[in-house]
Length: 149
Image 1 (cartoon, rainbow, N blue to C red):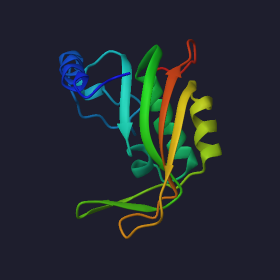
Image 2 (spheres, helix red, strand yellow):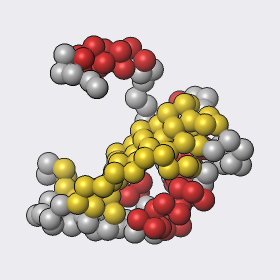
Image 3 (cartoon, rainbow, N blue to C red):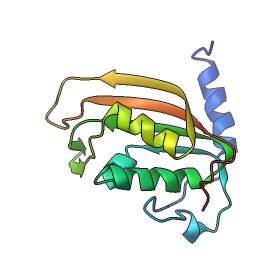
Image 4 (tube, rainbow, N blue to C red):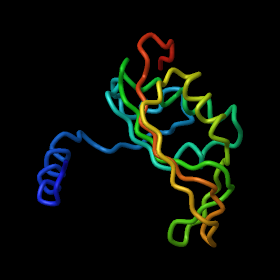
């Protein structure tokens, strides 16, 4: 179990391993194209796909593009939301595609992700969002999924 004294050491270790944080366009078939990067071992995303997708088909397309950036057996760590149409960060308001848990899990399976961990955090509706549930997901790209950039 990690203690509070381990946290600065763990943060330093992780910072040493991060190569960079780069712009990408998840709507593009090759989101890394402007950075000329090879496939990667891990991708993290927070409230990105929900803000870009307008329907289930576009969410699935973006999810497939994301999976295409991963090496076989690479990992995906996502924070997202279910339900709702808007959320606010500071003074900025964002739209959100409010999909169901079943649709979301089905989409990730369809694009070749095995869901390894799933956690939900529900909250009452607030002025700054109408989201039903926030979730955290860890998934692994299945070998030979056929999803390639």
